[in-house]
Image (cartoon, rainbow, N blue to C red; front, side, top):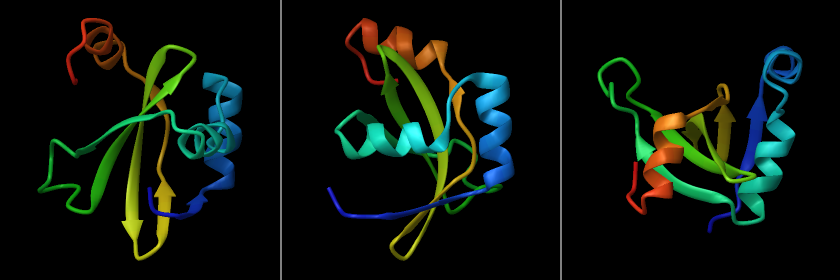
Amino acid sequence: MEKWDYAFDPDKNTWLIRERGISFEQIIALIESGHLVQVLEHHDRERYPNQLLYEVDVGGYIYVVPVVRDHQTLFLKTIYPSRKATRSRAKGRPS
């Protein structure tokens, strides 16, 4: 896996910690330790042409992290749990 620099909005990180109990730092650590399950193109390429969706295994549950790649930097947009992706993984299918 390529080595990336990571960037994110610190205010969004504070909100994520408060509202969802997860931080960008946790996601970065999980990605770097091999918990990145899959990278998908955003389903709405017209509105989000440069955005990818990272699926990260967080303790057996899949979280989706929309990211924008810019040269060697990954800008993390947000983090949200995905019941659909978690169910698909449990059945052995990609989401």
